[in-house]
Length: 339
Image (cartoon, rainbow, N blue to C red; front, top):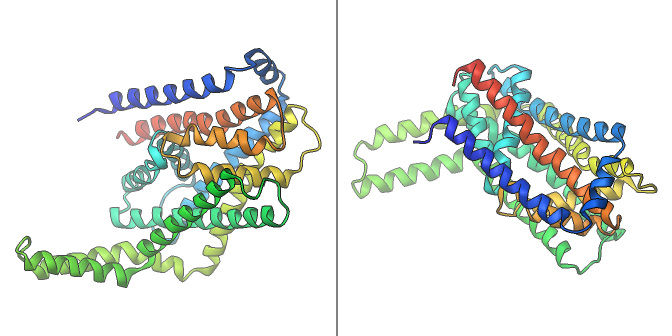
């Protein structure tokens, strides 16, 4: 089994490989001009952009903190924020951003939260995020329908709709897993009964009781959340605010590149399209798909080498910067927890 040191080395290699691909395809044309633009980027606007990303991740940490508290468990706000950045790291190095949730469950368990309850908390957090993503996505898609920014019949626009439908499907399945106690328990009971009939398990009552106990632990926090409408509303609101902070970053970077007369809402719509489409690209961090989507959608608003420079800085802040902070948080967490 790979030890932690070797695992960290593998993560580093993956990140550097992805970084190399992004730099190559971004700088292969007009390298000198792109580097000049980045060098002259306004520092105040760069700092605002970095701050917006940090606020976004703090909001994600707040979401976890509120859900843990609602589940009658304890975790410090600082550790929740650390976990938020650790999620960025593991989402960034795994296909379909699939690594963040298992690691979140692992670290919540290290905070003495049972695996079933930790799993449901992370499912709830994912549902709140997906709900907010869908709400913002519906708003931007409807806006572009009535006030077109991008061509109506373009392939990329259809890919955005496909990405939206995939995200909605994932939201629906996750919602049923997190809150559908009766249906999921009934399904598991039927599976156990079937396995008993074909002699794969012997003590039927023991396994049925085990399912009932796990179900009570798993869905206890879900019941608390459904009964706390104020918390539901707060979770959705803060996640929407977080996404708007994230989606606003290209606007402030563009201002830093002295691009004037940009509409902030157009930037939010464009970034929303990029993120929705990139969510089903099967590469670590959506690499390749997200960069292409950014160049396509923002190409309607920004032209020339400045577009490549903008994409590079934006990607470094929201992807590599997040993973860098996540790596620091991971090392700090391991050192303090001795894991």
